[in-house]
Length: 62
Length: 466
Image (cartoon, rainbow over all chains, first blue to last red; front, side, top):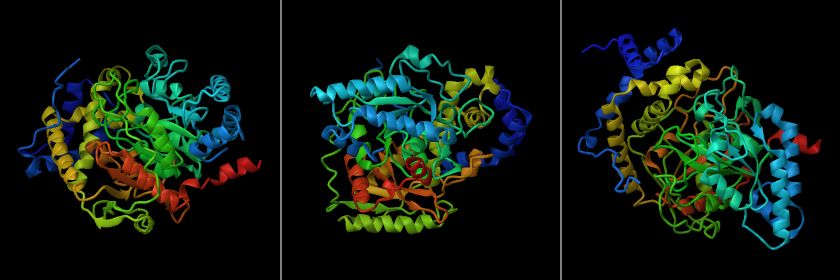
């Protein structure tokens, strides 16, 4: 599936209710390939497939 | 101005000086140099002199509160203090936030130890970004070259220590923010194990990446500070409830029996300053000469784990700032808001995946520590950049600090020399969780065999002559 960086970033910012300036949005769009590459690289770590995340709830939440 | 906390404490007790004299000297240095360096957001001269006078009276009466008694120190301006504004160097934070909260636990501990707090020190806005000349806050500059950046985000702390405005400071470190400015300014700084020092009362940046840490000229001084700062506090749910170790008695200079793993990060990151490798090799030779056995190690998934820190704390920071970014976007500095907003661009599953890789790598690194006692790398593979027009992207991949915020390991930066153009570079020493004692012992042993940490920038020398 081809991802349109501009559509993706615009949708994500809209969902977050954030309204950067045009040049700032353009910079985020330009960084999208690098950001997606970094995320895909994490998903590609085979040894992490069976790994638990560091999200353990406290035994005592007080 | 005496060079170290340890030395100042000694001369205080021999009667050669007083806390008031130390404090006046520090404040005079601030008068002379702070207009050029941008160390302070808020000076607390009257409070400091009153604290110093009290310290002198207490010491004279035999009420000795330990190695920080009467010592002038600074506090990074994202840490709450009663009696002073806390700005986080932002137009967004209510300056009264810190006054209303009262002292953060680490500030309360400094006060109980009799320290003299001279003021709130400059940072990056909310501890992230780069200097923003459009905002009404000082721009932190490097005392080795005032056209360059002090580093961040514990900027004023590093610059102030290097230039003699304070003898030590408390900073915070989420992706390197005590170690980066320490490397750039030629001072020492420790990011302790995650949870070793309570971080309540600090404006959060990354909840699972934030650390509070000591900064000073030497590893020994960092040990003295850590002995006061460390320990459980119920106000911080992520604080470790375990005894505080003795960080000082192991500072013998002898590393016999220790195994040191070296990863020069060749092929993993760029080398804008190639002399990093020469200086690292020279530092490792000194550690070997101190008795350590040196072996090579290969840090696993280096780029991935560095991204786990950067993207992870962007997501955590965005959760904290979302409401204010929506309502006050332009009150944030451009560098800060453009960094934090990336947290809006990850999915929940992305964050979970970051934390899965994080646990995997942390476990693999723990296995490395079955074979070695500490791991050393360069702190940075670049030197302080020019401050004018600086952007976050200018730093490239020169930050070799991020990895250790994800693992939560204790990591110390100590000066290891100068680049060919005269700017400092740091050696990073990393240890097992809660083994700050060994990390500090290695840093101290190196500093017994080198004097980089005692070098002073020319502008300090000129101010002392004047």
